[in-house]
Length: 291
Image 1 (spheres, one colour):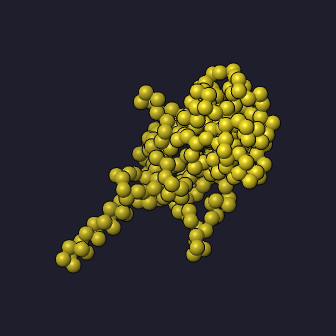
Image 2: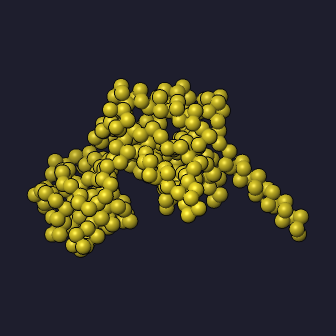
Image 3: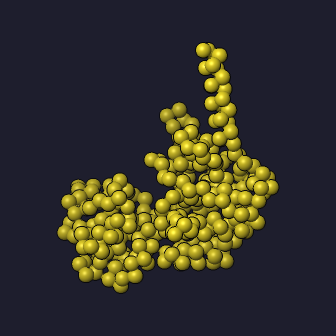
């Protein structure tokens, strides 16, 4: 029995090693293929429409692969409970629960020094196996509202009287239910996602929706309703309201990061990235690094 246990452990460790194998840049070029992880069902960034992969992250990944002279292979990544889990599962270790392969590159990762330098209780970097680089988008919070039921949004204080929809367990949810000592909580309605919140606004259940600007822009673009407009209010006591989104590779694969960053900069400077965002009705601000 002990011999059997040893053999089982050896096989399990071998499988772990196989699953966690990270391709080198030379291996990727030799295979003429770039494996890119994008979030599943996350419009307008990465989603499927009638079986076709769409979204700004998908199109950017396609443009990067073309610039590098390789074909693109998408790996659809269901979002985990935490970003740390996603980086582990798709960049450096792979999930033991799924027959899953590692990606060479992952899209939509915060380009944030504090996050990348975050340490655990032992003082070790929590994401030491990962290099986060290549900011390609700035993101922020945004409110859209229906002018048929709400004249304007001078401040979030209007949501003491007007119901507003948010995604459950999101930053806007926590913000609106806690700011001003919870004065907006009674009028904050929760939905499974931003599309559901917009559907509720169309049905008259709420007068406004708060989410990330990209998601709001996409929903407003999809609605094509002149009465659904963007607010210009501020968000007092919210903390960080503007951040940059980038990419991630395994820490041993910096050569790939350099190649991707070079291709990305060219795509940003020639207007290709802005054009991708415009196709989905999204505003695009050039990240600070390229200004």
